[in-house]
Length: 414
Image 1 (cartoon, rainbow, N blue to C red):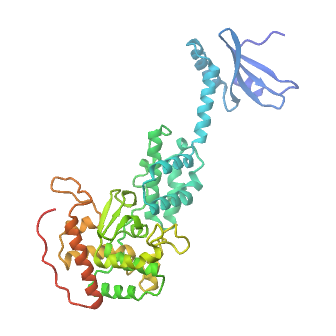
Image 2 (cartoon, rainbow, N blue to C red; image 1 turned 90 degrees about the vertical axis):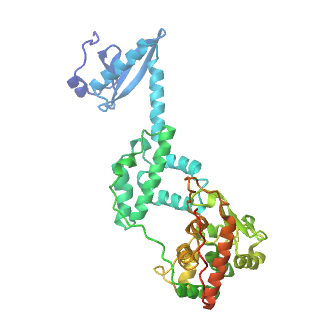
Image 3 (cartoon, helix red, strand yellow; image 1 turned 60 degrees about the vertical axis):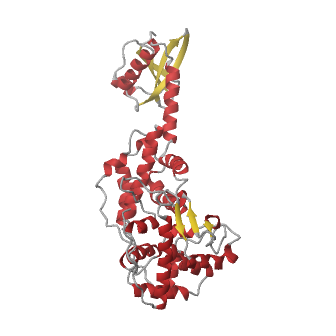
């Protein structure tokens, strides 16, 4: 029987029934449909390249229709006319497809996390990893990153966070996902950051300020309570030192002995531990040095000044200081460990009348000179040293209830 040479029709392809042996339905120009005994159908292309007959699979039917198969035929024939082997093109396409499937969001986020968060503070890295593990990976982690849509992120990740009341956390998580996508753009894994389409989609929130005491008598009461703290000497020492250095709680927790020079009276915090990613110098008052000298025999042989009770290789946890304040009878609505920064900013300005730029330098906030240039870490160090000693003396006065006479405000620009 002569082989059919007329082009196939959709009806012929759809109605082709399985037989005891596989057989072919030819469409022309090397394209044919292979029908197997189990009923499966697939498109094949037979062609010659450098004098050798070759065969490649184009895809299964009905996933690949007759019209789609003919389009692929035209595309591959054009490549063949240009001297390219369609089978090599197909191998490259299959490899790209496999890579696309392997390049999931979790894979890309893992690459980003390893390369772009190494210099972040440990607490920030831990928070970022937890957000990915808890809120992101369960829904979109296994999806190829190039296939992720804004809707998937909104409905799968962010809306559930909103529903449980974590609106601010949802905004932060969106920022993490955005950074992963921007990294993917740079690496060529995705074309753009799709979270840009979610602008305005989330509920707005008011950023809450950390509760803090700014009334001198209340501050004095808290300082006296800290002196009477009956918990761990390590935790008490951290509580006593914190108002004297007014750093962020995470920076205090990760304070290391090699960073401290007790003779010079300085604490040099490396850039990787700072929120603004610039190194910072904290002048140490006489009172601060005394606290460090008192605890040195206990923890000086290790890395951290305030090590965890469970392992000296780790610092106290991020909840330790606030838990201690709760133990002292202060609620989370009254005061937090981070609140010492607001206490310092308010009272150093209003009571001690210290220049605001000195205060902002001490808080490691971005401060620029009149020409718009950022100051380096040693800016106004001598003045800040005097300020921190005056602040420590002022706190001592609050503890004893002594009357404090404001210092004359220092003049001059920043």
